[in-house]
Amino acid sequence: MLNMEGLSAEAKIGKILILVAVILSILVIIVLGFIAGIVWSVGQVTGFGIMMSLPQWILIALIILKLAGTAMGIVALYYAGRDDFSRAGIFAVVSCVLPPLDLVMLIGGIFCLIGREANTARSVPSLQNP
Image 1 (cartoon, rainbow, N blue to C red):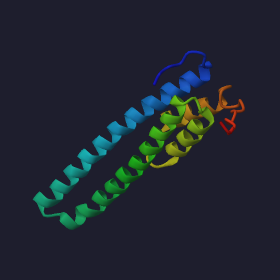
Image 2 (image 1 turned 180 degrees about the horizontal axis):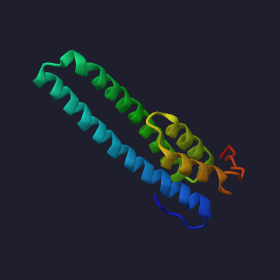
Image 3 (image 1 turned 90 degrees about the vertical axis):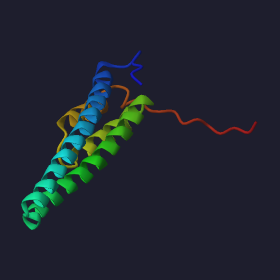
């Protein structure tokens, strides 16, 4: 996955930053899930179930949005592995916009978009009859 021979410095940095951002996103999902579990258990134990439901729903919404952003980050990492840096950069930039904001993914996506590999024309294989 980190085969980087012959890539520009921007593409290498972008690929590494996208990988780091995906790992950090997974850790954020785990932490948000842990916090949501604590809020739920505090609401059940203390009898403040109604008062704790709003923070719990906010946390659940953040977890769902972060899952969607992480999925798009994994897609960006997939395209970066296939050396399609223009698509990888676009997916990384869209992924970082989903709340909570992910600045590492944004910087990685920008580096993928400004590299020389993203600006080269990709050849489409022609279909020939055998």
